[in-house]
Amino acid sequence: MAALLEVSGLRKAFGGLVAVNDVSLAVSAGEVLGLIGPNGSGKTTLLNLIAGSLRADAGTIRMDGEDVTRLPNHKRVRRRINRTFQLVRVSKDIPVIVSVMAGLLHGAERAPYKDASYDAAGILGELNLLLKAGQRLDQLTYIEQKRVELARALATRPRVLLLDEWLSGLGPGELDGGMSVVWSLAAQGIAVILVEHVMTAVRALCGRVAVMNAGAKIAEGPPDQVLRDPEVIRAYLGDADA
Ligand SMILES: Nc1ncnc2c1ncn2[C@@H]1O[C@H](COP(=O)(O)OP(=O)(O)O)[C@@H](O)[C@H]1O
Ligand SMILES: [Mg+2]
Image (tube, rainbow, N blue to C red; front, side, top):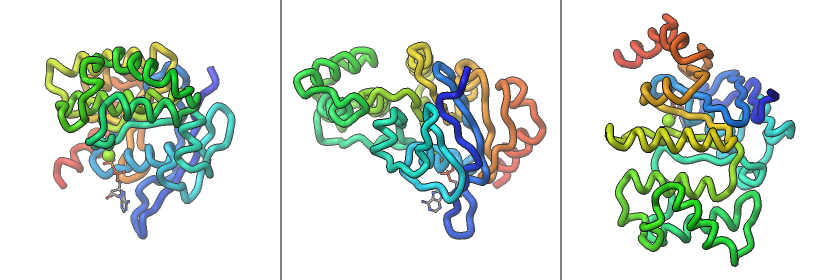
């Protein structure tokens, strides 16, 4: 199957620090691609480049065959690329349902206003948040806030979804629920790039994993194979020494 999102030779430097160095990868509809690597290896920067919150110094990003490398973030959202943030970023003082409606009104399909509240309720229902619809984000637990952030991203109807440590910080009882959510997104045909430290989740959800270290992609393949790779093990041990 042709890849939905194709990234080729991406590079981003901050001053003298090359945060993303010549990275290529591809992800297909319905696939969950794991993106792992030690802290500071460039995972979030790579997601920022794909989402268009940062402009690449070199390389190309193609979405469904179209070159989107030079498009700003909001235009990529309309090309159906969206993401969640490592730290929750949804406005804290507005009702949950309103932040999801905003996603619907500004996303790829730009839903008519009269449908937005109904559709937002549907998305909140899928994420078990319907009873929280009228509450402000700062009244919710951390886990619920992460789900709202996902709801808001889903409201833009992404075909490529970038999850930045969306499962991190979940307790053992919450992880199964979070993993089912990711699994159901893929089952709906969404291409997911999952940046994650929780290896149980990576092994369970990802058919393929790419590993970053110091800005470069150092390995890619099935999780079992990649996590046994001596270079990958060295990268993680180096991180522990730091
Ligand atoms: N806006 C920025 N300005 C300067 N340096 C940055 C910026 N964002 C990230 N970096 C640096 O780029 C490197 C990669 O960071 P990041 O992509 O956040 O890694 P990861 O998500 O893998 O932990 C780190 O050394 C980080 O300090
Ligand atoms: Mg990060």
